[in-house]
Length: 336
Ligand code: GTP
Image (cartoon, rainbow, N blue to C red; front, side):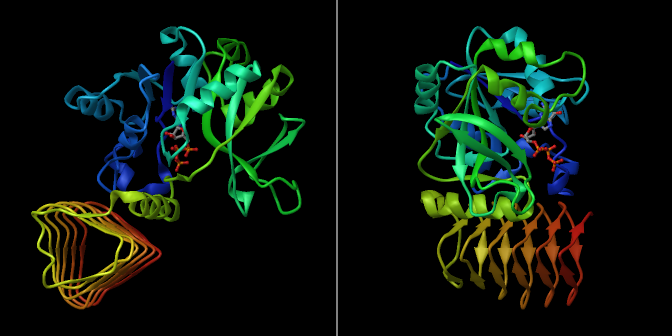
């Protein structure tokens, strides 16, 4: 079974990190986001087709260097075509029924069970659905007699009683292409799914966890889930002997920690954290943090330097940002 990974969006909600790198290649714990998907695929998935518009060359070059267990084809989309148009753009490479994964989600969804559910049901498509407490940020899915009966995108309070939401993992028959117009941007979720209901859309209820990683809050949730699921690690080449660690944390090779770290912290390679506090945050490679700094609920770009006594909360800092001593960076997006 072939898998299409739609990974061509601008990732605006993770700016400024996505000004210089595609969301698919943003590091999440110990590897670029898209590799969490590729590494989770079973042998029955024999090819991943990655549909990219924004920063296509970076994704193509990454996979030229990176050896994958399964064949990877990175396909350029010269203008952004939306999630539906992205599929239409790779139609020529598909040989039969195929799976589709949104590229900015990490999960424990079982690819083979999703495919089997689809085969048994015999409809035009199968959509993985997960339960959330508040569906207002998602595409809610209403189910009647085992089939999807209605979609409500980002429902207002009271608009639907359903707590089941589209998890961004699908299987489709090739007949789906009759419902996607060629040559213009098409949203799979808003424009195509409603029209597929009459052709038979099956929900796939999965066990395990699932998280979008496309906003600061969701990225940190995804990081927490991965750390809790066994990705926490202190690299043997890291020096944390002078620090105080509250698990789960991940500390990359060559990093040095004197301060308090965790829970839910990831340090990339070669970071230096003085007598500071870092909680629920990511420091990409070679970040330096001076004494008395307080970092929480934030992503700090590679090579950034945080001056003594500074506070950084609920913020994303681009690579190379220099935060002066005693500065307050609160709920901000800081470009270099
Ligand atoms: P924001 O700009 O922050 O909304 O992020 P995004 O552009 O990634 O949009 P969104 O999170 O809604 O997209 C869901 C998935 O579809 C992500 O994996 C995107 O990379 C992908 N995607 C969105 N738009 C396009 C597109 O026009 N072409 C392709 N190939 N993929 C897309």
